[in-house]
Amino acid sequence: MRQIVKQVCGIDVSQKELVVALGRMYDDWSPEIWCYKTFSNNAKGFDSLVSWVKKFAIESIEVRYVMESTGVYHEKLAHFLYLNSQSVSIILPNKISNYARTLDVRTVTDKTASEAITLFGLERKSDDWHPPHPVFKQMRQLVRERDQIVQARTVAKNQLHAEQAEVEPLKGTIGRLKKQITFLDKQIAQVVGEFNVLIKSNEKIKADVELLASIPGVGLLTAATVLAETNGFDLIRSKKQLTSYAGLDVKEKQSGTSVKGKPKISKKGNKHLRKSLHLPALAAIRHDDRFKAIFARLVGKHGIKMKAAVAVQRKLLELMYTLYKKQYKYDKDYLQQQNQEAKIEIK
Image 1 (cartoon, rainbow, N blue to C red):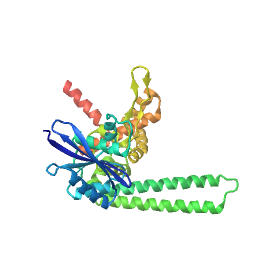
Image 2: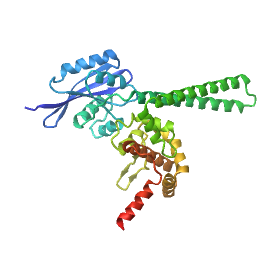
Image 3: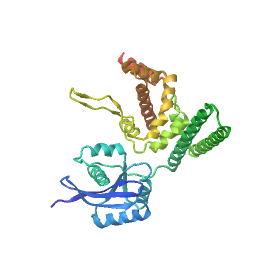
């Protein structure tokens, strides 16, 4: 008789609903999905979910709750389960989507999505999730708030420019737009002020931000944004996984000799992370010989400057991850020193 060795509750999270599939793995490594249910994404639904799982799961075998990190809708459930001593794993969306492509599923629904998450949890070993550092969470909120205000200010500035270019501009409209821009400037200053106070409140995070900001082109805001959006690289285990999480991984379609699509980045990742690296990459290309050489080599290879700039963004992000893990500050002469040491060893 087959024995159950693992139980997983896969949850597809949306703003209002939790679509749940309960699955188990047998000792012959065959998975099985045996029940489904939908719950509300609120406190009452969380209690009902845990009671339902206890009713149908084998009590002697731990149940692992697995879900995607979809925006912010999963966070309340994850914290609830963690505080109730449940085993929780939060998986990067690109890992689930890549796994789902291997399944024989033609129609994608919330039910099939929860099934894919459950099967992923059964077949793969997942790390335990724990709540991010409160400072990282607050940093992320402030960074995103600032970004939204900056976007609103850009819209207002464009409207002001268009109104001033009119043959007969309205003085009242121009005055209101200028007041709106001044108000948004003050809000940005307030958010940045709170942001700086928050970073200074924690010596470890302050040191990490300064460490990443040692890279040419990377300012304190960019460094803090990367740490906030990755929760201090908490779910990241490799450079490849990091670039995929940011949506900077290269997607290429090629089959035989007849099908060959142009390589391009997937953009299936954290847009806030990608956006924060655009201007730093341009600054690094201008002011650092290493990134300037990478940019020149790639432009010489395919002649597309934007494509080369995106490659520099990816290099910057990978470098930030490496420096953070090793706790080293950026040294522009590092590669040259390594080459010299290698030559000495050869001699």
